[in-house]
Length: 109
Image (tube, rainbow, N blue to C red; front, side):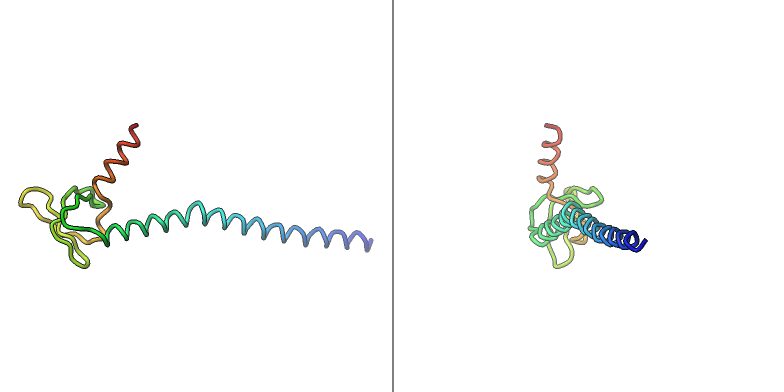
């Protein structure tokens, strides 16, 4: 009877370590396939917003297409049409319009 209890205890200890290994492996997979790409995308968007220049054609997160007329520290003045200028936060700029057109062309091809 003593040998049976020793074998059962040894088998239980091994199951716990394999569970921890699987949990660690799942975390690594989540990091490389979900967290890291999202961080890279956010870093690229922040870099794009920091490098905005006058004359660039952009799209806001609300879908407004416009041309950058003026860039301040936290805001951007967009010209939506002739004589129509709107001030937006830099964080509301989604992407360069030429980048969006390139992505749409790649999807349709």
